[in-house]
Structures are given as C-alpha cells and as structure tokens.
Amino acid sequence: MATVLPAPPIVRVKSVSPTWRRFRDAFRRHPMAIVGGVILVVMVIVAIFAPWLAPIDPEAVSPVRRLKPPSSTYWFGTDMLGRDVYSRVVYGARISLFVGLAVAALSTLLGIGIGLVTGYVRWLDAIVMRVMDGLMSIPSVLLAIALMALTKASVGNVIVAITLAEVPRVVRLVRGLVLTLREQTYVEAAIAAGTTLPRILLRHILPNIVAPLLVQGTYVCGSAMITEAILSFIGAGTPPNIPSWGNIMAEGRSLIQIAGYLLLFPGICLSLTVLAVNLLGDGMRDALDPRLARRM
Image 1 (cartoon, rainbow, N blue to C red):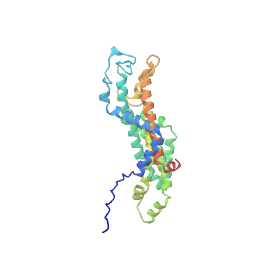
Image 2 (cartoon, helix red, strand yellow):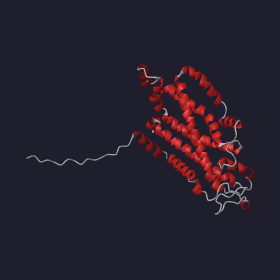
Image 3 (spheres, rainbow, N blue to C red):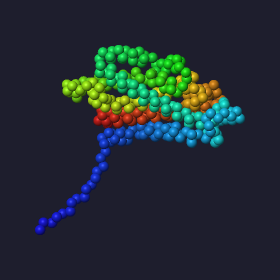
Image 4 (cartoon, helix red, strand yellow):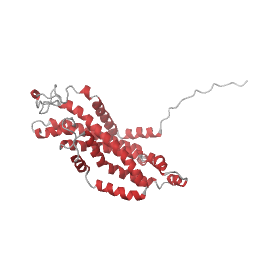
C-alpha cells in the first residue's frame, strides 16, 4: 500500500504593493525625508491640540507682564501687550498650516482643470497660456500683495490671493505633462476607438499626472506658508487680532533690540515647518518618479 504523505502547510505571504514598496525604499534612502515627515506630524498635532497645549489665552492682555523674557513661567516670553508668546506661536501653527494646505489643494485642483483642457485643446492653449505667462511674470509675493490691496484683510482673502499667484505654475506643469502624454500610444488608441474627450482626460491622462502633482503640492504648501507670513509681516495678510507667525514677528520687529525672542521663536517654527514640507516633497519625488527609482 502506498504511503500517503501529509500535505505541506500553507504559508501565507503578505504581499506588499509596488507603490508602497517604492515609498518605503525611497524614504529609507532619504532619512532627512523621514525627519521632515516627523517634524510636520508634530506641527500638525500642535495645531490640532492648540487649545490644550497653550497654557494661556493667546489674546489675554496683561500690562503687568509686558515684555517678560523667556522663563519657566513664560517659555517664549511675553509681548508688549503682556500676551504669552508661546500660546500665540502654538495657535499660529493653525493659521500657517491651514493656509498652506488650503492653497496647495485649491491651486492643484484649479491647475488640473485648466492644465488638462489647455494641454489637449490646441486653440484654447494659445489663449490661456498667454494669460498664465503674464501672471507668472509677476513675482508671486507682489501679485498676492496687489490682490490683498483690493480686499480687506482676512484669512479667506489671503488664501484666495496666494492661490491665484500659485495657479499659473501648477497649470504650466499639468500642461507640459499633458502635451507629453497625449502623444502616447494608449491615448492614440483611445482616440481611434472613439473615446470621448472627457473620458480620455479623466481615465487615461489624469491618473498619470497625480504623482508629479503631489510633489508640486508640497512645494506650493511651503511657498504659501512663507507668502502668508510675508503678507502678515507687512500688514497685508491676516488681521492683527488673529495670532499667526507673521503677525507675531510683525509686532516684534520694532522691539528686536530689546525683545529679539518675539521674532526668534515664530521664525524658527516657520522655518522648521517649511523645511519639513520640502524634505517630505523630496522624498515623495524620489518615491514616485520611476526614472529616479531605476537609477538608484
């Protein structure tokens, strides 16, 4: 009689998607990208839990504690109105991150819509891109200042002004990608099969430009935070009653010789946050670009 051998045990292998594997390997090769991600996560946590992390109301005025230097009681000191600078810096993270993320999202969405159409419709491309070239000829900060001069100071108007200044750069990126992708074989096959234009744009072209747009979005986010701080610093950004890093530095610029900490601490937070966003963008670029992945 033949001996029946027991069946070998079934070993379940956990599969890892190629995209996640590329992300993991790219970030392992770029430890600074991990550092940037950690810093950004910390800043987001600080912004979310600002009411619990700030020991004092950021708008509480007290003439008794005017211009107190940093100490165990007031970690970042106090300003000329006696407000706790640490509490104001913590709440200022909300404004900077909100403006940066909102501008990145809005400019990316508008850039996708305009860039897809102008990159595929030739006669519309000649008209729209000349307008975009005219906007790009003006520095984004000056364009945002000009737009804010026409409206009143508010967070919403700051977001709109910076978005309009950043959209042309996203549009040019999307247009360039569309001009390259429209010559690919699979797009020509879809045209030959009678596929409608919206379907070609949304199904065959849009998925192939997501990766570069994610990377561009991180740079737009960092640039928007810097522009918001500049606008607030010169008095054309968020209202003075709203604590933001630019407003805190603007209030302390006249006291830089006797209370330099008013500019030091919000400036460090702004620099670290923008640096973290850019480092994270570099890591995403290396993870999502197949050419860089093959080269490495």
